[in-house]
Image 1 (cartoon, rainbow, N blue to C red):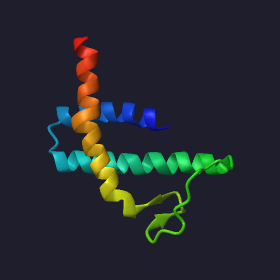
Image 2: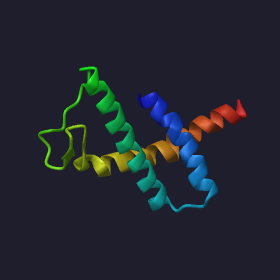
Image 3: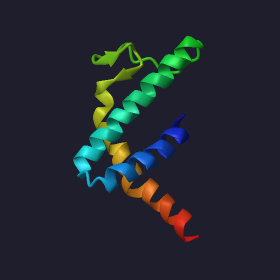
Length: 96
């Protein structure tokens, strides 16, 4: 789930950079993507009775599958992914 998400974020990063979106807009796009990804996986896993997380106890949750309380941590994770993980992974792939 998470490995596929970062792979898809790599493509999203490329498109956003090609369109010259500023960093705040990219972080917002990544965060929305992360929430959609987590919600869709959670919904699918819940149908199978296998969803390992439940945010029902959080104040700003949606069906217990996501919570807005994690928006800033997800944005920070997206920043680290864009600025370090994806960029350095592409460097290894392109220059090795």
